[in-house]
Each structure stands twice: as structure tokens, then as C-alpha cells.
Image (cartoon, rainbow, N blue to C red):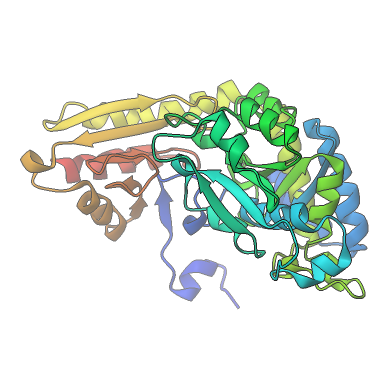
Length: 385
């Protein structure tokens, strides 16, 4: 048993860190608010029928976000997996039982080649086949239309890549897909800010969208899907709980949720929709300003402040561009030195973040405790000197 003066981490011999990387899976997600913790604690006081909880919480989420239907999932990736499964199977139990064997089903999902990303594997997990269209410069609307054939089940659309050169806009992709009778599955994991952008995606006409709660301050392991009722029900029919129904060994069995996570998800969404986001952004910008001011006078260093904006993660960022040749250190080496030091500080550096130049560092102040900005500023200055 952990002593009063010993944390659960120190008892295990695990280092704690200062998180200047942001909401990140490898760092354990978010720091929970009191409301979220209270919801989880209350859920712990009693057991419930999990199917009843999933249905009722899905109805509540749909009302909150303005969707036709919704369903909790164990994160956005799991949401994409069961969504792809549902698009292929509908609520047909025989098809659900057969996954990931998809013989005889429409089992192809289209993806624009210039929108390939690390999570497109979600389509292949339930047995679907990913078919790339266009080239690295984009795809035309005609190419999309011509690519839809008798085996096409749907289109995967990672909306955070919609600004890529030559990408077909979501509205156009939806129009073409629906005209041809296929579903559109939107990866919108962190498309949560501003709220009008968040809501515009939900009302875009997409058949299914997947969101993650960790970007709202929720558990790393929970998210939700929403969209058209028939598709949400089909996805739910492939979820972990469906495996418990007689004769339905669903492919989503491994994506289990518990009652604590589901109640936390509701609390997180409510908080996010009621939050003063101007103040949230301002607080993070103040932390980043402390760091920027401490290192901006150094030679071989250029500072760039990136504001939170539609289509991007819901926080501001500080980019520190360095001249590696003159400094004699690479961004990757600086990142590692900060990780190895005391206290351990984690940032992104050397191209480890999406679209980050290999000569740059990226800093986010999402979960800073009091004084973390000063510690990061001093340590970073030391490494950049």
C-alpha cells in the first residue's frame, strides 16, 4: 500500500514529467477537472445495465452536440473501426459474425492519396480494404465519382487534412458519395474548436463522425461517434457490448468501456460546450509567452506563435525554429535532453509532430501546473544556448 508521503508513481519507480507536448496518448491523455472526477466517482457507487447506459448516454450526447444519434466509444480510433464495420454490415448479424472476413460484402473504402495518415489503418482492422484515389497532388471530383464501384462501401475523410493541396472539399465529397449511394466516415477526432466549427461538421451531412474526449479534457480511452441514426445503430451493433448478445461475436469486443468512462464523457462534453474558450486559450497563451520571452533573444532561434484555429487542434502552439548547424545541436537532440533532464520535460521536436519541420520544436501549455512555464523556459534556454 502506498504511504502518505509516497505517490503511486514513485512507489512504482515511474518518473513524473512536465507535459509541454499537450494532450498526447503516450503521456496519458488529459488532466481531469473536478466535475469529470466527480462523475467518475459517482459512477463508482453503483452498477448499472451497461446497454441501458450506452443507449441513454448516446441519446444525451446527441442532444448536447446536435446530432441525429450518437454512441460512446473507447476513443476515436475505436469509433472509426466500429463505424467502418457498421457501414459494411448494417445490423445484419450474420455479417457482423463474419468480420473481419468480408467476402460477399461491399468492403472497399476510398481515401484520397494525398490524405493518407497514420490512422487510416482503422479501416483495415474490421476487414475492409483501403483503396487510394488520385495522387500526391490531390484528386478531382470526377476521379472520386469514377472510383466508386460495386465493392465500394464508403469514403474515409480525415477532415484535419482537408486543407491539403488538391484535396476534394468535404461538402463536394459528401455530395458525390451520397449521389452514388455510399457512406462518408469522417475522422474528426480533435475538430472541437471553435464550437461553431465543431457543430458545422456534425450538421454537414456526414454519415458518421468520430471524436475523442481527450482533446476536451476527458479520459484518454473514451470518445464518441455521431451521425445518421441508421449508421450509428449499425456501428453500435459491432461494439464491445454487442459481443455479449447471443449469436453476435462482434469485432469490437476489444474496445471495452466501463461505466466510469461513459459518465466522464458526458461531463466532459457538457463542460466543453459551456466553457469560456476565450479564457482557456488566453491562459495557455500567457504560459507560452513566458517561454517565448525567455528564449526569443537567443541567436540561431526564431519564435513563431500559432493560434488555435478551425481545422487544427483546440489550442495555441509555440514553435521554436533553430539553425541546427550554427547551434551545433539538432531539434531532436534538444527534445531528448529535455526528456532526460530533471525534471523530465516532454515537447515535440525534430519532426515528431505532424507537419513539423525537422529543425523545429513545438510547445503546448495545455496541462501546465503553476510554475511549469518558468521551468520549461529556463531549461529550454539552457539547451538553446
